[in-house]
Length: 405
Image 1 (cartoon, rainbow, N blue to C red):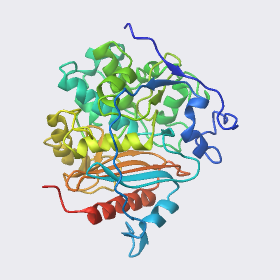
Image 2 (image 1 turned 180 degrees about the vertical axis):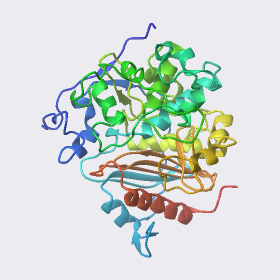
Image 3 (image 1 turned 30 degrees about the vertical axis):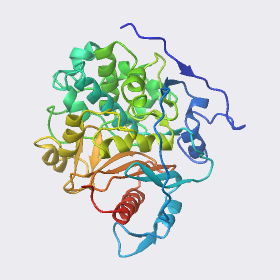
């Protein structure tokens, strides 16, 4: 493939903080700083904004005292208390496109970059949907049509649709605390962790080609980060361009982003789209509002095709059944996973973009409420903190108004 010039954002230190050890940056005491300064010690590729910036009007509303019910017990806390006790770096709530609440805690500032972890998956799947709408990508085509380097791997006969819905039969462990799990070996391949295992390839694509199939494609929901990394290569195969540049052109610029974003890259310049995107809080609110406003940017410019938004909220004919048959517990009874987003229950109006260590975009198209939270949880996963946050944004959604007519 002939790609455009790869732009990298440099790696000088920030705010006098030395680069953390490569095997410790995702742990205390480095985690919070690392989440906001990854470009200072790891290579990244710019996802550029355009000249047009959509306005985020302000309509301040006091959310602090809102009562939030505990997700598992018979007790409650205020909205402010939930944000304070869940290691929040910054949060924002918008209602029908207007900011009703915004707060930055610790060292995060307006416009500051923050690693999104798996919220990156939602951005990447949306970019694939935009390519599909433009006729440049067939979601029902084989993965190997776009990434022939994966022929002979576990992705033989898998479809692009299986990637965006997390339904391939590829073997891949997502156990973040197991240093031998594939999710951690992937980090060794891209240079996010020191090499501890012999034989791990030195590039992301090389690593993905080693994965093998354990079951049928198109079966139960099976959350695997590798799927979205493959999707990044599908985007590149469909366009002969870097996926970050495609995301910039089709999504980041059209939605009127205020700030550049960036994505971590491996030694060959390939983006780590399963969790390597960093962006500013305000631009995540702009992204969430695309889905709550029928695909329109805040200034009314069409960005997402209506069919993609509807397909995401409606799901496929067996999306909820596949989710119910997941091998690992989801703690979201009646929910589903579609097009890179989580549906935490039976409602077809509420969906989430989620990332480990507490990253979230909450989108409620019935009320027009979007909630964004960036965090530095000390552990990758924490069900109580996750559902406290969902309940907090639900409380804000209920308080801010009746469903849209």
